[in-house]
Image 1 (cartoon, rainbow, N blue to C red):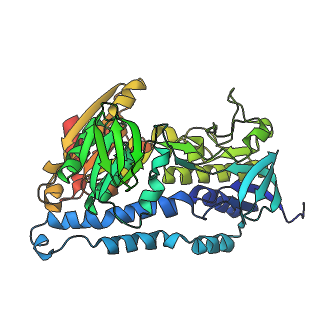
Image 2: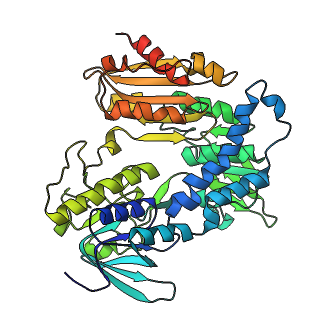
Image 3: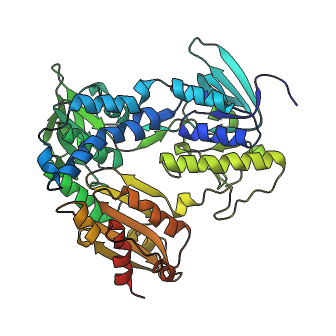
Length: 481
């Protein structure tokens, strides 16, 4: 075996949650692994996304829940302590220090190289650190790109010069702006509008394509209604034509209709772009700045669908654009790590649907929670997506507020549930819940979709009474035996 200290079985570019999990899986499988990170070990989710944003949202969510419970709401005499919320957010972001994550890498036997990683040739990665020193790492078996994505900044005149917030600046904000304009209506836009409205901002949402446009339509409608009740100005169809920041700091957003919106800060949340601009893709015949296309075992493939020569390059997480969600990236990490180990040992690769080395759930059973008020929890296909896929479906809806457990959970509980059934196979292929605190109900639906549990068998999964999960029984009753 090569004893060069800079040679490893696998080199992983990117030490976010995906890269960390890939490396851990490799080491557990008996291979050596090194990860390369240019920023903080732990990545976007730990410091600028999942953890700090949910910390911003949770305190207000808990306060709203108490205020909907007679007997408990009388005990609440004040409003949110914004400084305390921000301090709690800071703690969940580890004060933007990665010492704990670095310690974990060390304990797991994973080597860390800090700096910009660039592929220079087949299975070779050059790491340039802050001082300009270049270290060349060689991989015996594979290189995995797990560099994630960054906020997409649209080409709107004056926007860049106005110093807009991306999701990063919103998640790490040191103060709450008096007025916040949000360009976008998707998950990040909706969650941050919810959070900053609760923290005291006057929020305006410019939702060109509507609020949560990729969810079931009723979900966007309920979230829009709730945002407006919280004082947020939601403008469906509104599109920014130009942006200008005055010397006094005021941001002026001129809409394509000629109307103007003023704010102290503007958050742009319209999508993501891959972090592949400076990782050496051109050295292996790929386009810098492009999303990477992969097969079901996450090997990077060429335009004809075949793995690149030698099959040594993999891409996991946001960068392959299959699903831009942390938990789905970690799921991919397990598949790609195990696939690399199997190939390194000369073992068979189980890459068929639902196989150990295949990321099948990316296409069939992606769970997602949007932590707005009310929460949106969904898995699998929407009714529209199922129809577009040519599936003969039956869609069953139920008023979530009419379930006994919901009435007990909160006075005035509002919500809705939808079950999408494949009528030919008689299995659930999509499930959506919208309502307060529905996030923890989602995994049951995920299991039903992944397990392809026949509807007839679901009748025997009896929900406890009185819980919100009783909605399963009500949906099945509406569907019929």
